[in-house]
Length: 181
Image (cartoon, rainbow, N blue to C red; front, side, top):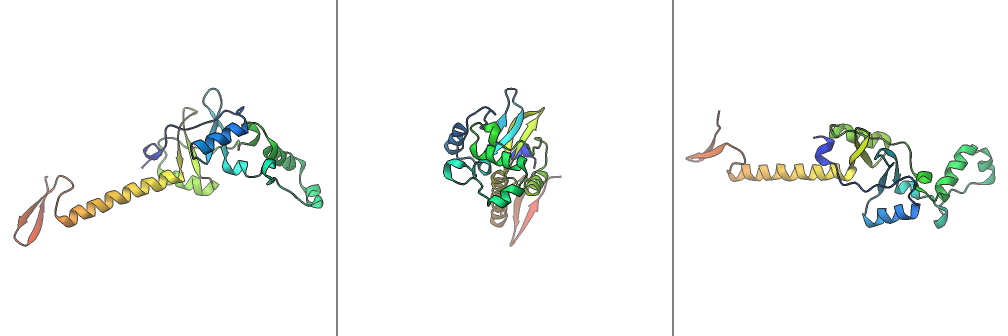
């Protein structure tokens, strides 16, 4: 199976200039945990996930360090953390590094990307534009569909009915399957 077989095509997105409060509202309304951030041309420029919103000053979860540890922390790291904790626009809090794949990417590669980068979803991009998204949940749903089909095939096989072109022929106590050549 490939990404195109399991991806969600109708993806909810935000723009870099969207205010954080509006982005949070979208996450809640759509019951999703992340939003691809796209520019006016439809190019993915980042991802805004729940992880980007965990350390916020509004709820008192921004990072607090002892003064001596803060003195040893590089200024660039402190500035980045402050921007994430106090940012008002998506571009200030989003993760700019996006791990993506194409529609033709096998699901095994998608699973590897999810594990390797410790992420929960992969935007699917064609010609630089967002065409879908594959999440861990989509992989589990694909597995569930496959399991249901396998159970159905086993149930049909046990019942003696045919689930394909071969039709059962009864010849006494044994069951012989005739197959077309």
